[in-house]
Image (cartoon, rainbow, N blue to C red; front, side):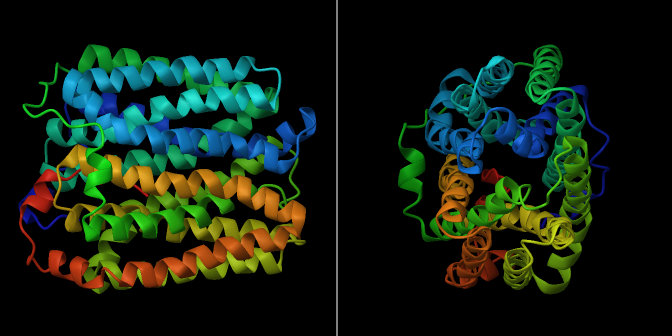
Amino acid sequence: MSSQPGAAAASPFKQPRAVWAVAFACVVSFMGIGLVDPILPVLAEELEATPAQVSLLFTSYLVVTAVAMIGVGWVSSRIGAKWTLILGLVLIVVFAGLAGTAGGVDGIVGFRAGWGLGNALFISTSLAVIVASASGGFAGAIILYETALGLGIAVGPLLGGVLGGISWRGPFYGVSALMAIALVATLVFLPPTPKPEKKVTLFAPLAALRHRGLLTMGMMALLYNWGFFTLLGYAPYPMGLHDPLQLGWVFFAWGILVAIFAVWGAPRAQRRFSTAPTLYVNLLGLGILLAVIGLGVSSPPVVIGAVVLSGIFVGLNNTLTTQAVMLVSPVERPVAASAYGFVRFIGGGLAPFAAGRIAEATDQSVAFYVGAAAFLIAIPVLASGHNLIRAAESGESTGAAETELQPVSA
């Protein structure tokens, strides 16, 4: 995954306790992405809300995450990485728990916004901490991070289904409790991290987007996340599964494929075909699958099958886009992470709500066609930066891109 061959020699899973504490918190944090999927139809039914209204759970969470990303570097450069992580974890614990106490959709949406603020502080800092503390080099740290991402995405929907079968409030309380454990582990096992010598200005991430490579990857990721969160936030409705546990198993199977192809499939595809060509095929595959869902939206088996298969492409995209950002962007690690996260999460936040509104105004299938179009438009956007990615992969770029940047998962 990195071009440092020696870094991969040591096992990425032989790590100090500090790394495992942060990795566990990463797993729980990434659970939050798909945790609410199995309870979306239940929320719509029990709280008498439309799919578009319920989709605001994603929108408030991700849009706040995106905007807050701008200020994460400013915060972490003043209080240090450890206390930025802890602040993020505290906010997640509090607001995830409060979401479980809400009396209606509006309350959940509001508390998910606070959850998103904590999420921004945490995810933008966690990989930097893992990279700094992990044994086995940079490549091993990336593998460990992607493993945490895959596990979180896989387990989140299943846990949401199990707890959602008891009550729709269960998944929110569950995340709050698990993040409280992660908070204690981080406090106990992660040693103090020094404050950076250089303080980051508040709008440094926005200034960084003037770099063509980072802006190109950000715009590609915005389009990708539009399609991805259309899939994640709206596909549960045409599946016709009203049991949260059944929905949980569907997205668990999807998440297992995400994990397998993120950790093992992506490095092999990259070695054989290189990053950009693999991503072109990947985006095309996702566009086709979303179009299939649109065509077969009245057939639950078609929708379920296409969603599960999409896990292959999502897993590949997570790792390869992470690495592409790392390769092409020359700015400092926290700044690159914040700038990229800001752009990509905007797409993820707006897509589910837009999908619900489009479906209400036209037909369910149209929402998926729009998502498919976003995947396809991402191909020429990525192609506009093809030479930058190829040059970075062949070692023509400076080595600073590899050591100074924090890649963040798509």
